[in-house]
Image 1 (cartoon, rainbow, N blue to C red):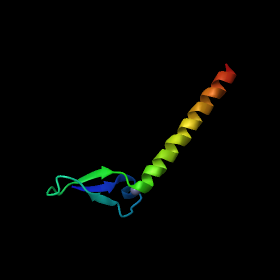
Image 2: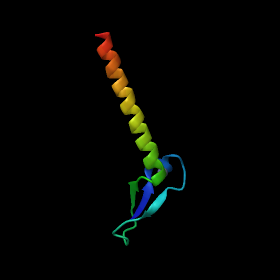
Image 3: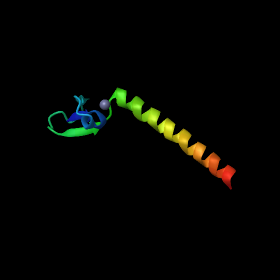
Length: 62
Ligand SMILES: [Zn+2]
């Protein structure tokens, strides 16, 4: 199976990350490349910060 990065694919970039068992099956499975792991982690961290800021503001308002 061919593993492609779903994020790269969405950007229209070369998205193949590698191969996965079973190798004789011609199918595509979605994964995430090293570059996009960082992007997703950074975004998750940002939204966590935003969520905790929002709850702090809500606490002050009430
Ligand atoms: Zn990617």
